[in-house]
Length: 114
Image (tube, rainbow, N blue to C red; front, side, top):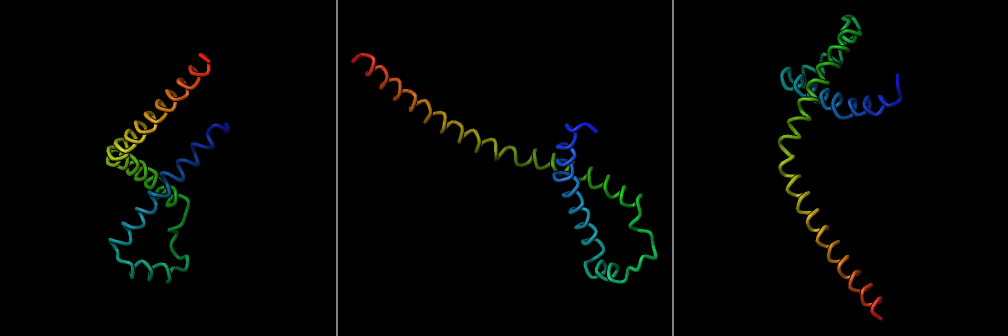
């Protein structure tokens, strides 16, 4: 595996799979009830193969897809707010930078004429 894929894999794990698994777990808790989930997990003794490879693989794929959808919804929803704020900040600092440049230019021109 090329080393350039490692950051992409970590990004997928952190930004898509983990949030997707959290939302999947919350849906499961919400639909079956917390008491029912705790009771199932506390009485689990390995009789059913619910933690097998294929079930984990399916949960992983569903979590990835759900995380991808959540990231796009987040981008669409909150990009409007962050873009306005970012533009305001950039405009402020750009104006300050131009004013500072003008002060330096006047200073160097005064030094040059002396």
